[in-house]
Length: 530
Image (cartoon, rainbow, N blue to C red):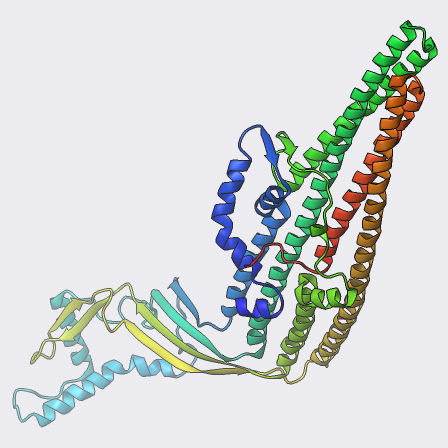
């Protein structure tokens, strides 16, 4: 496909960039995936997925298939060259003159020769040559054959018209001069390739979005483990402080047992969270197209800063950008164009097709008996014979023909007319699909922007809440250390702090996934083209 045309349609020629950079990317991926443990960032995860993801690898094969279909379509207008050959062994050949008076003509050939001999004898002014009777002429002729050791023609009892071996070698060339369906099929194949190229770009955006979601999910699970691990360490210290307070008689045994039970429950939650984090990492590995046997460690954290704000937050402007960049919108337009081309193919059946042809044949009729009998010059009743070769020119002939062939279906019971009507319906349905898709895209963009705004408000709220929870915990811990507070109050403050951290992480996770979905909804290119 023309790269300039893709850019004009908003495609930015991403496929060309990916293919050009593929060797370097593949080398980087090989380095990243060596060993039993992989430590990756989000950018590295995306890089691996763009090379290794199973869906993308299948999509590249679809592009190869589309390219092959274009070449196949062109084949219908290229010259068609066919070679043929045959050999026939005639075991018995009928006499073509059987049952007609024409057979007597060939039986009288001897009389014709006799008449010619007598006429020559009368007119040659040689007194030694005189006309002779027919029976004498035949006897002398037969004697000449016997003296030469030659079987007289027609004495073998074979069919004189039989040719035992027949060969034919042919070459035919056909060139389409006008075939409306063939040329429309070429255009359709090109359109189908564009459809597949847009599908690859759509798959790439989908894969990047899924990888981001999987990475953020694994990162959230990892952060949750860290929060729980910190909480467990904090609670262990609290249990130890409670134990000392019980021994000193400051707190009751009930306080110590309650703290220990809470610690066991929290440790159980930590084990479950660690398992969930490991499962999330393996799910990410599956998205990246690498072995799930490898241990995947994430580098990064769930954090928010103002640089994560979308470049465009106005739904109208974002919608206009989406119309230019989204590959699925271009796909719908391509599908509509494909339906129109299908109508052209159908309408071309109203018109004739015209082909030029040229045929060349080399035909051989070779008998088993290739002996040639001829009279000796100057000796009327002396004969000689010679054997002709298998490839003698008298057995082989060439045949050459050229011409034009037109085919025109004048009437087929209104089938073509009804097919054209169906094509028009298909076009109208495609137009309705495009209209519905544009409305759905606008709704998707509007919803993702609202999700971003909601998640951002939660982040701002949880940032303030987290500061208060940290202050509350520090105050409760200080009161416990001074003997003015209880361990229960400290544990409650610790639990509130943990919940605030988890709520903040959840809000950041929701914002990042919403941002990824927003970028996908406007068709943001996967690779930077600068």
